[in-house]
Image 1 (cartoon, one colour):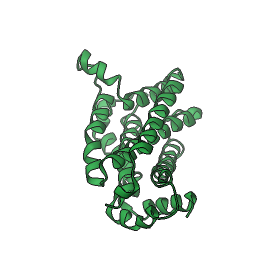
Image 2 (spheres, one colour; image 1 turned 135 degrees about the vertical axis):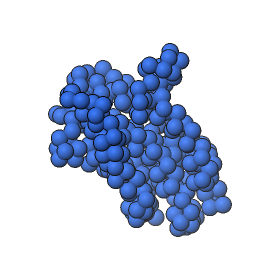
Image 3 (cartoon, helix red, strand yellow; image 1 turned 60 degrees about the horizontal axis):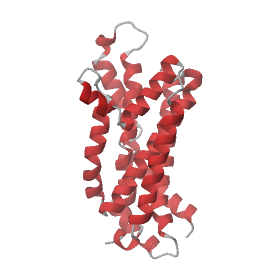
Image 4 (spheres, helix red, strand yellow; image 1 turned 180 degrees about the vertical axis):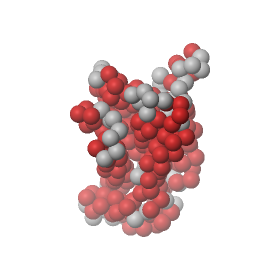
Length: 248
């Protein structure tokens, strides 16, 4: 069983799970509609509507949760039982965890690319217009980070429940300090400082500057930093993952 076959198996398992599909497609659309409608009166007749504001933020919020999709792909009980034979197959341990990570990433990349393209060209939201592919790139690299963190959590804790429990706090902190639901710059210097170490804040700030100011000065630093953290997480997976613990 080669890597492509394992990858295809994992990818199809994601598509067969309606909860994962809906969480990465319908959920962000629903959040955009709900938050946009609730806050519509606060935005007035300016250039940025409530739907425009929350479209970007809710997509970033949803991408943050892809770490949980990765843990489900890796350690969900039904998937885990079905993949037992892979552990005893003549494949390297790298292929086992990497197929889970990459299948989740490819699924997320397709889902969020289509959401951004659909939002701009079907619903006339502004995701950078001709610069939309830069926004797609930032969002997709952020998704890679989430998949890497989710996979690492599974390698460390050996169960979906423990992995998700461990991921909830850092993801919640990233979202809070990233200012996805409300601005944090008015909450004091300490909160403002802490927001500067949130990957969510990096992605959101870079995207906003590209969309509204045509400013790309954060684009490559954000891409490089997120990619470096993702690679570091994958490196840790290689160290801590033990196939025999996967079936325990």
